[in-house]
Amino acid sequence: MNQPTNSAQWKSICRIEDIPVLGARRVAREHGTAVAIFRNADDKVFALLDRCPHKGGPLSQGIVMGESVACPLHNWNIGLADGCAKAPDVGCTTPFRVKLDDNGVVHLDAEELNRLAIEAFEQTA
Ligand code: FES
Image (cartoon, rainbow, N blue to C red; front, side, top):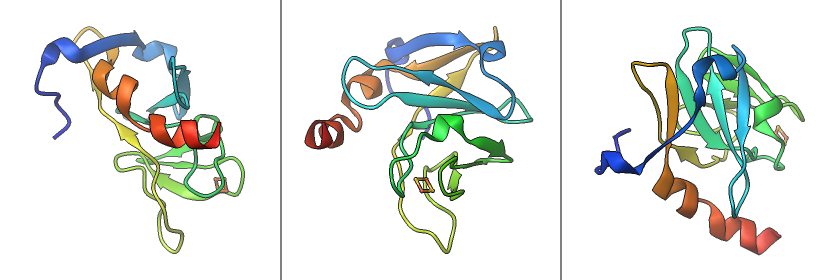
C-alpha cells in the first residue's frame, strides 16, 4: 500500500541524517501546505501534511513518540502512519507515501506532492 505503482514517481528529498531523531523536516511544495517528514527512534520515516487536524498546528514542530507525534499547540497525538488523532480526539490529516532507500535517502511520491491536499489549501488561502 505504501508503494507507488510507478517507481519513477519517487522524488529524492534528503538523507535520513538530515531529519532530527524524534523530529521532522519540512518540505515546501509549489502549491499547498508543506509536508512534514518524521523520523522516529527506530529510524522509520513517515510523512504527513504539516497541519494538525485540530486547529492546523505545525506537526513538524511536534515531538515524535513511537509512531505518533504530539502537536505543539494543544498536544493531540497524531498517528504517523495514518495521520489520525488518537482517541478521544478525532480527525485526520493527510498522510503521504515515503520511502527510505538502501543508501539512506528519503523519497516522497512526486505525484502525491503535486496533488494531495491542494484543494484544502486553495479554499483557506
Ligand atoms: S492544533 Fe494541534 S492539537 Fe490543537
